[in-house]
Amino acid sequence: MQPVRDEFESITESAPLVAELRDRIAREGGMTFREFMAAALYHPKHGYYSTNAGAMSRGGDYVTSPEVHPIFGTLVAKQLFELWEAMSRPARFDIVEQGAGTGLLARNILRRAQREPEFAAAVRYRIIEVSAALSRAQRETLAELELPDGSVAWIEALPAGITGCVLSNELVDAFPVHRVVRQGDELREVYVTWRDGRFHDDLRPLSDDALRAYFDDLGVVPGEGCHAEVNLDAPRWIAGVARALDRGYALTFDYGYEAAQLYAPWRRDGTLLCFYRQSAGSDPYQRIGKQDITASVDFTTLRLAGERAGLRTIGMTDQADFLVRLGIGEGVAAAAQEGVAQMEEYFARRRVVMDLIDPAKLGRVKVLLMGKGVPDAPPRGFSDG
Image (cartoon, rainbow, N blue to C red; front, top):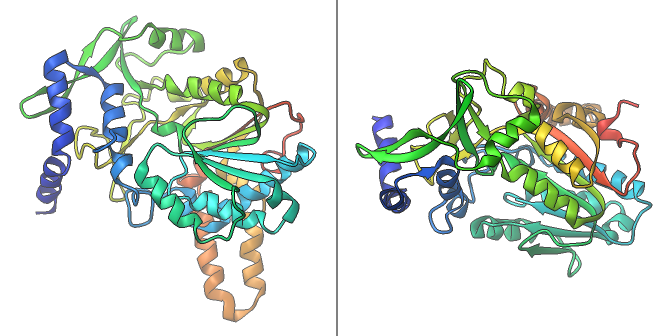
């Protein structure tokens, strides 16, 4: 009976959003998938991120690296400290985190920063969050720390004149995407329609010439008959980061691939995934407003757009290698050396490390570092030297 109950939930819990989208389709004759996904995730009253502050937890729909263990934030803080030093220790070091989840990454970075008094004094942490529910959760999480006035603030958009680092973790893969299908030499776009009591795909001409230009720029197209996602917001976002940075870095953690892999002819169904209660699915038309929807990031386009906007690519790696280089194994080894009484802690830490660096899980997250007005040498998380 469980599947019946879940289907009932999908109808009743998201009924206001379903009704609103259905009425809009009736008026306009359909909407692009991007418009549908934007509403499902970011509608101010009924969208997923507006109503599901607990989604990013072990008891929620999915788990991100900061929710696994504080060691992730500790090691990110270690990398940020090195970036601060590479910039000759400026008196003000802005850390601007966009899409900060429940605030655990911010909390663990700030907690680790307190071990370095000069660094802690320089840090100005700014959070950009569109979800009121998540903003409340972040404030509650950061209330655990005793921080000087003004060291943390919430802002509405990227500010100008950033000296420091723009940080994001699993942000870009949640931007709404267009979906396209290749039919011969033509690209068709997925629109969303309503019939027989539910939403359906409908292939139509492209809504935006930028979609064709996107693939022309890459020199890559999806395989014949393949579905693919196009994230036009991602290059716009990184260009905005470049404009906002006066001097410093953009440090991006996200699921994704190079364009040649993302749009390979064997990838018939694209990369769109939905998450609900720790389970992944592929139907975005269920549990509308109650499940997460993501699509893998095209890191080729993201890098090229950043470079055209004035950033320089300093390094790119997998999260597994990034954390290993920064010493994730050292904390586990330290627990083992503390004796038999600490063996339970040792095995707990070891399980956490495996979650964070497993190449089939969080370890496959890509880590991209771009910079502006900073040294060329890659820092420890991106260098084997």
